[in-house]
Length: 221
Image (cartoon, rainbow, N blue to C red; front, side, top):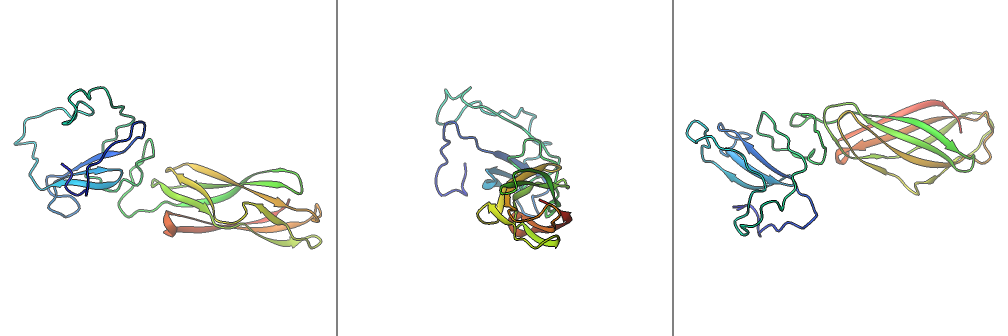
């Protein structure tokens, strides 16, 4: 049933997986495929048969009723979430987002950055850096690539980022319209209260396909 796989798939108890069916009687993505089956975003089966409802009696779509190898498998499955689209979707990079917002093929997310909170002592000042996704496309593997401070006022001093030990700082996937945060700890010992800094925060996601930088002025410890 899954000719595109080298060996039979065996589900692991307690480990969820994502299954999808794409269907278009006129062909999928310009191919002769009229029906495709995906698991965890990977194509595992396809068919060029017509699958035309005009010639096939109406029937229900049954999930988790039984398996060919186990007639007693009814009620052994838990369906967590079902989403239906009005086109033959083939990109399932958003499959772990509970309520994905439709994102056109090839469209990329739009990210922005900001310092949303400051707390802690002078020697361990914690800055919370937030990345926001301002689009309808999910951002994958978003990260804060650096935190650069340039002093612009006050007696010269050298603040040191102690956490993370190195960049980039990964913050994970960002659903459409959502925001995630990461923290950096900075040692401002030796910096006077009047010291001011220009801060540059480069960021990226989708394996570098999306990148940007936020510059903030008049920042202090």
